Amino acid sequence: MEGVQEQQQTAPTVQTNKKDVDMSGFKRDWNGNAKKRDGPKPPPKKVVQNQFTPMFEALRDELDQHHDRRERIIKASRDITALSKKIIFALQRIRKIDEELPKNIQAELDTRLADISKLLATIAPEIQGINRYRYARSLMCLEELVEALTFLHYLKTQTLITPEQLSPIMDDLVQKGIAPSEDVAMTDVSEPAVANPEQLEEKETPKVSLTQDDYLYGVFDLTGEMMRFATTSTALTGTMAGSGAEGDEQPRTIVEDMHELGSFFEMLPVGQGNRFQWEKKLEVTRQSVQKVERLGYDRTIRGSERPKGWIPDLSSGDQPEEE
Image 1 (tube, rainbow, N blue to C red):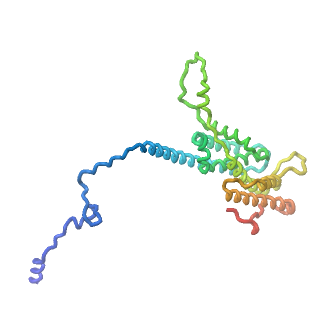
Image 2: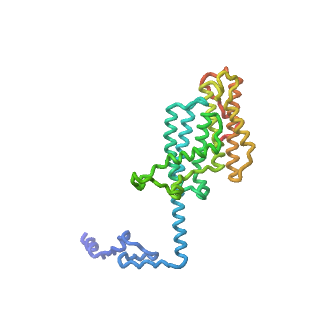
Image 3: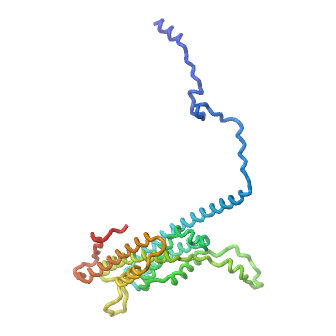
C-alpha cells in the first residue's frame, strides 16, 4: 500500500491550458487560432461616388416605392376578395328572383360594401394611369367584386349588368370610401369662396377602372353562382327560379338565362391574354349550364315524384370534375 501511495504522489500532473478547454468563448479561423475580439475596428470603406451614382440611387428609390406600393395593393386586394365572397354567401340565402332583398341581408350587404369602399379608396391613387395595368395581376379582387355585383344585379332584375352600368357603381364605391379632408383652410364667412379650376382638377376623385378581362372573368364565375342558386332554390321551394307576371303560364326561368350566357361565351373569340385561363373558365361554364339543364329536366319529367327539400345529385361519372 505504501508503494502505491508513493507512485500516486510521484505521478506527474498534466497541466491543461484554459484556452484549450474553454473553446466556446472564442471565434476561430480556419487554422483553429483564436480570433481577437478586442482592438480598434477597421475604418469603414469609403463609398465610391461618381457621375453614375445619382442615377442608381434614383433607380433604387423607385424600386423601393414599387415594392411598397405592390404590397399595399396585394393586402387590400386580399381583403376585398374576402368581403366579396361574403356578399355572395349572403346572396345565396335568397330564394326568389326579382324581389326586394330581405332587410337582414340588405343590412349585411351595406356593411360589406362600405368596407370595400374604404379599401378601394386607399388603393385608387396607386393604380392610376399605367399602374392600372402594371399591377393587374395584383388586382384579381376586381374579378371577385364584379362577380358579386353582377350576382346582386341579377337577383334584383334577372338581367346581366353591362360594363357601362358597372363603371358608375365603382366610382360611387370609391367616392364613399374617401373620408372628407379635415385640414381645410379656414376662410372668413363674409368673403365668398372662390374655387380655383386648377385646384378642382387636382382634387378630382381617383377612379378604379375595370378592364375587359375583369368583367368577362367575373361573368364567367357568375354562372357557377347561378347554378348553385338554381339548385338550392329549386330544392327548397319546389319551383324553378325565375320571374314573370302573375298568371303567366311560362315565366322566364334561370335555365333560359344560363342557356343564353353559355351560348354568348361560346360565340366569343378567345382573348389575347391567358388562353389557358379562358378555356378553363369556359369549360366550367359548360358544366354549370349542363347541371342546370339536368335540374330542369328532372323537375319537369319527375317533379311530382320528388319530395319537398329534395336536392338532385349533380355529380355523375360523365361529368368532368371541377378543379
